[in-house]
Image 1 (cartoon, rainbow, N blue to C red):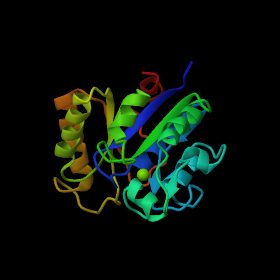
Image 2: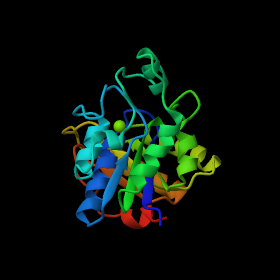
Image 3: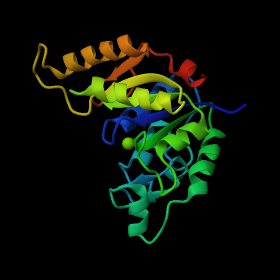
Amino acid sequence: MAAAGIFLAGTDTDVGKTWVAAAILRSLGSAGFQVAAYKPVASGFASAADEPSDAWRLWDAAGRRWKPEDVCPQSFAAPIAPASSARAEGRQVDEELLRSGFAACRSRGDVVVVEAAGGLFSPLSDQTLVVDLAKEFALPVVLVDAARLGAIGRSLAAICAARAEGLRVAAVVLSHTTPPGDDVGPTASRTIAREAAAEITRRTGLPIAILDHGAKRMPPGIDWAALAAG
Ligand SMILES: [Mg+2]
């Protein structure tokens, strides 16, 4: 039987996806699951083994089994869209490897966590958008957004778009990408995140988690193994 899995997609780039992926991997790993991570393609690091690339961080969170290159078989140095980053090196994104890399990862664990690149409609190559792989992999989708002002609008737009594409959105995670300030009251980042989470759940019925800045594991509340099992 194919491993269970989660497809993490962002509302945008830099919304804290890797932190969330790593925290889910660690939470599942400490619950006794054999976890595997997959990043179809990355830019910004010449090699998956370069610490602290996303691939390296996922490999670390998944228990350092196999090699970082197994987590992310395609890395390009320039921190721009993968196809452009590949072109800058006289290479191109390998379409087949985007898919076969996933199949290999899936065979390595009980649960595979896929971290896409950028947002749901970001291009992974000249042919393939993140949403295309999400459909092909057919895993429950977890949408990640940054826990900052605008989260309600960004998250609802992404949920609507994902559902319109036929994806099964299973949960939302708001990720604190910066340390919380000392402020309290309605403008505090924690308050904004909490109120955004309540509003997103009220409007969509989706479970939602908030990941603290730098947190290594997910907070209690969502059964990630059950969610991954579909
Ligand atoms: Mg990332």
